[in-house]
Structures are given as structure tokens and as C-alpha cells.
Image 1 (cartoon, rainbow, N blue to C red):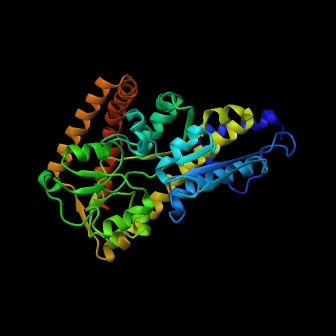
Image 2 (cartoon, rainbow, N blue to C red):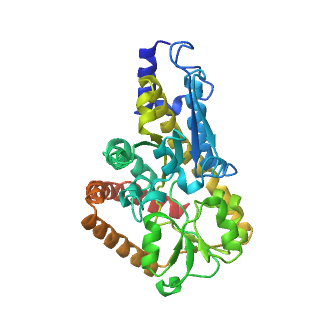
Image 3 (cartoon, helix red, strand yellow):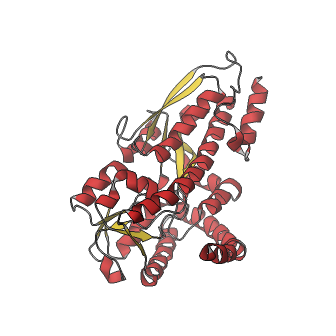
Length: 366
């Protein structure tokens, strides 16, 4: 396949459902000798044992190699193998390794606007988040924030709406949160802090021991499939829903901008296509795996609990108060927030008519 055809093939996948149709068995998208050999490393924030979330990184690497006949390779590394789980951003910014797979909201200390790249409390579902990123100007807005750090990002995974975390005791009212020690990152953690929680940020591989040994009283990770792999059901009994702080959490491939600029345009197109495929594939996998995993947890004695309306209403009020405060203090945050909020308002009105009315009838009657 000629170089110009590779660009056409890859860009088609990066901008539409074509990427999902690129099966792992499809042949290379480039003549073997037409482009240079490039070997990169990818740091991740995930234990390899979490096959779905680490699998997003693996999908990107596998597809890049397959579409270039092995001339462009990226080797993924589990959290701690190259850098600690929560230092992927800094490592990629420095250029070693060239790229990483992580969540942007781990790094809100650098700029709180980065939270929108993953998910924010009472924000967008997975389909809404993808609409904002791919068609509503969201990706351009987040990439502008990353550009200050010599990084370019692309969505490369989504967990769907997450669960609301594991608690050692029942949480019935806002007062029950006071003094509670909980692992929760991002702006969701800041909201929980405003509700009286002592917030901790821990990588996935450290959550179980902290919860089991009482260093924390509660923890959230993703959902039933991953949570059960971490064994969180053996450390806490009460499993709350919904994860109001992460209604559609996006994971990113972060790429050192200087390394990105050195890539041939063909390889850039391939990498964007691979990230797109990882984004779509991970969501499908989680939606498939979580349904059975939740039933297994309930059968094993987990107590499924809804957050009270009091807690949800207080959390929503504090969330938007936080956004307004950050917008008044940080021009970068305000720029992203204003654009995001306008999109959110519009898509909430639309989905309230089509999706919510359908779900309220069909899912409650099933």
C-alpha cells in the first residue's frame, strides 16, 4: 500500500467507525520498506492484572504495529515498571518514555482543567463525552491545555459510568461522610473533600491493602469487573452507586510533543486510529464484563447501596460551586468549562428527550 493510501486509510478510521472495523487480523497498512523503523515505550498507570484497562494501552500498541507491518512499535509497561503510576504525565513531558496511557484527572494539580479530559462530577456519559471530544470541540480544548506541557493527547479508552465506591460502613447522610478517609482522585475528590471527606489519591495496585488494613475507610476504582479483580469486595461490604463523579471516564494516550512532531505523518495517522479503536473497544468490553461481575459480587454477599438523594444533591451543589470558583481563578479552566457547560446543557436537553424517556420505561420494566 502506498504512503498516500496509508494516510487516507488511517485518517478515515480516526474520524469515524472505520477504526472499529479494523480487525486485529487485517494486514499491514504500509509497504514494509517505505517508512523508517521507530521503537517507542509507553508508561501506564495500570497494573497488568487489570486486563481491560491495561488492555487499552495494549490495543494501541498492537494496532500500531499491525498497521505498519512492525515498523512502528510501542512497548507498553505496567505501572511501576518504568515510572510510578501517578508520574506518567511528568515522564512523558520529559520525553522518556515517548508516550503514556493514563487519566488526565490525576494531574489536576498542574491545571484543574485537565479533569475535563477524563470526567467531572455530574458531567457527561461515555457517549456524551465522545460526542464532545470528537465532534463538539472538546479534544481541541483539552489538547490546548496539554500543549503548555509539551504533550499532545488522544482519547484511548472509556470505562463507562462508574460505580460509587466501597465503604466499610453504611453512608446514609451527608454527616456520615465527615472525617471518612476515602481514595478518590480528580475533581470528584475535591467535591468529597468539601463534603467532609479526608481524600486520598492512590494508584490501583495499592487500594486493596489500604482498604483492608484500615488506612482508608472507603475507595472507588472503576466498576464491578476491575473492582473484583482488585479484591475490594474482601475489604469492604457496602458497594454504592452511581459514581456521580465519573459518568463516562475517558483514558488518554499522552505523547511527548517533540516525539510526535518527529513522526512521519503516516505514523501519526496510524497512532490516532489505534487510539480511537482502543477508546471504542474498552467501553464495549466494560459494558459486557461489568454486568456479570456485578451479579457475582451480589451473590457473594456484597451489599449494593444507592447514594441518598441528600448526598447526591449536596454533591451536585458543591460540584458546580467548585467549577465556578475555579473558572473565576483560572482563565484556562474557564475557557474549557464554558465550552463544556454549553455542550452539556444542550446534550442533556436532547438526551433527556430521547434516551432518558426510553431508559425510564424499558429498563425499569425489564
